Image (cartoon, rainbow, N blue to C red):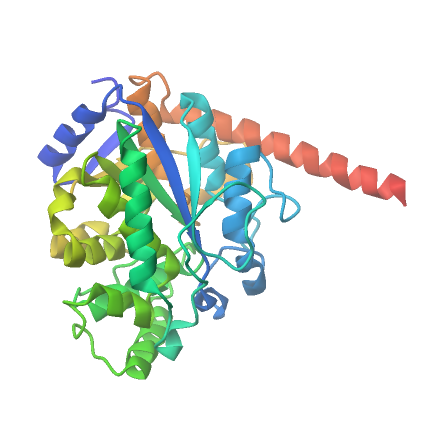
Length: 377
């Protein structure tokens, strides 16, 4: 098969191979679910943004980059504190090369993108240490499920990704609340995974909510409401609607296991139509374990785009190989879909070259804008 060197079979290999075969040559659509949580502003939790306050802008800027090829709510590109660019660059490269359409679902953001989006009546999430993280979870899931079912009527399959800073901590919250042994297993956008901080934050939230780990194993809505985030609610609902009739690639890292746990609790029959698509950086991450998480919830296939930036001429991209960022904005799942749609004609090396091209274009654009402002003054 033309995609074999570009797609790694990470978990449930037999199921993964069959799932991918069914998608070969199909026409996908990419849906990015965005949200904010105040949890991202806890120092040391997230690397999405040069400082915690800027995380409010990250989801909007990510999807603007996908749709316009530039960010409009901020100058430049969303970066880590060290200047490593957003994985939305990877997603945009793969979408462009394979001509895959993209849509945005607003699960609940503070800064709305200057771009079209579907609104499911969600609100930004609070700090999970309050034990009251998300309002209106049931309503959001219901509306997102309707949207997912409608999208599924128009395409062969869907790839659903996310952008929400701080999302691995809220994912840990939902997993622990629902009885999944996730301590030390969720990933991080930083090279040194702050597991102890994440567990401390989640445990404080659980105490504030008056629940112990596992108490909400049968109540996903309560788990997300207490210690989750708005993206999880919207993402789970959308997948529940879409996977009722079409295959769905849940594109992301260990956050996808929190979504998986919610779907298992609400509509488990759709999970036979679901796989997780991630990146090699998540699959090989020594500070997290997506396989162990998935195996505790539902044995869905896990596949990964075999992206490698070690030979890149751009320092910020080579940094991905040292464990920075790793995944986000559907980067892995969309790259897999691009390879499948084109029968291997769009390979991971092609995506890397396109990312470098896009990065260079954005840097040139920013320099030109800076020069124009200087001359204007």
